Length: 167
Ligand SMILES: Cc1cc2nc3c(=O)[nH]c(=O)nc-3n(C[C@H](O)[C@H](O)[C@H](O)COP(=O)(O)O)c2cc1C
Image 1 (cartoon, rainbow, N blue to C red):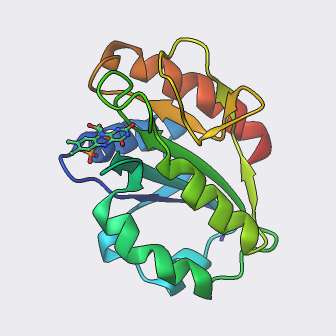
Image 2 (image 1 turned 90 degrees about the horizontal axis):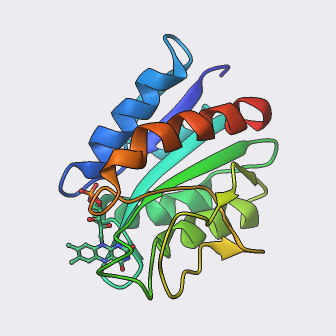
């Protein structure tokens, strides 16, 4: 399918709201939005280009609905598919596990033959440790609605400029 499939999971609504912003900013007709809670593996497999949108819970864990869906990723062949990941976290309260969940999704996609795109700079965030960092860059877009909500719109627009070329 030509369109981008956006899949989000959200517990308290932050990721849902930010993902809607992303969807709107991508422009009309460019993407289709799915709550991961209502998604089947077949729904996801229909797309060649995807955005995974997730929040971090526990100690760096995937948001509950994503956790439930996670085993289904093992049934999808991601070869030839590209995936960009957006992760929400809280750098002040969880500085040692900041958006760690991003790596879980990235590793799984790569293991299944897919390509992760859309890495971003870690500049502008303050945290001690994150498994989502590779070569001083995040594996995808990182959003912190708890501490930096005023930066979210700009971060989304910058990221869209990046992923437009590679997704
Ligand atoms: C109990 C709890 C655990 C959390 N654990 C982490 C964490 O380990 N790392 C992190 O970056 N953010 C963590 N967060 C922050 C959430 O990811 C953040 O608030 C996010 O915006 C929630 O998004 P949602 O409403 O879409 O689920 C945690 C929040 C709560 C309440």
